[in-house]
Image 1 (cartoon, helix red, strand yellow):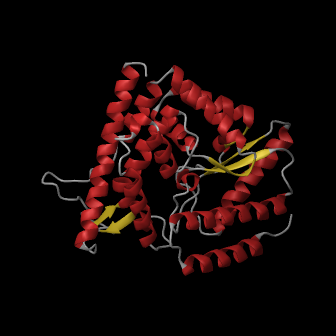
Image 2 (cartoon, helix red, strand yellow):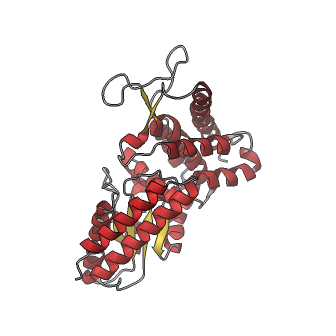
Image 3 (cartoon, helix red, strand yellow):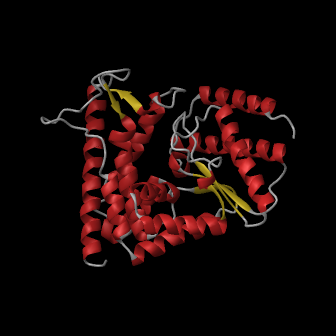
Length: 325
């Protein structure tokens, strides 16, 4: 097998040079991340030999939604055509090579091990069907979390239509057993408190991030989680939060709930561009006191509207499930 170390280093140098030049919008930044990951795949395939059968390499998380910042950890998986044990061994090796290659380029390993190197996220298509069925029937906290992660998946290489076919499993189950939406809603409401008793924004009180707000958990995820739940409910294949909002807004029943949400979420993503760090952990925090008064006012509105959106989605889901809508 060719030595990939030099190829990964050249890719890393190119990536860091391009990131240092800056990006003016999230879309162009995420197209760049896509191109980096596809090049990593090309190096990995050259090292191991081309895949022996049809496959799909997908990304999920913020990458699947096209919402990565300058730095992002890994969230990806593999689907492949069933075959003999040699095919399983090949994709197991490929999954590890992809995770290690991305890590070499500055994408930290996923703390939750949502990576192609983990057998849980590297399976043949029939085994993925079985896995989703198990998660759907189990309905535990972890199973629901995995389903939400998978729902954000987007094919990057290979047969992307397999992702859509597997999502049909989720849609069909949800239509028959809408309790899945209730569990997703309950899980999504378990978010960090944002405001204190007199309406003040709660910041980190000690430690490395003293005086900062956790941008990811306080502001960003309430929108992502709420909109994802409605996307599952309505059978929407789109993975980006803004794209999902567009499709939900076009549905007459969600016009009021989605009012202004796309603009607010886009503003949040622009704030993400202002956090230029190569530390994944640091990219989640925003120094509150350094913000200008108008920025604080805008951020407070984003925080409040995100919390209101989650509550509105919970109320809507509970009502619709109760009445079989």
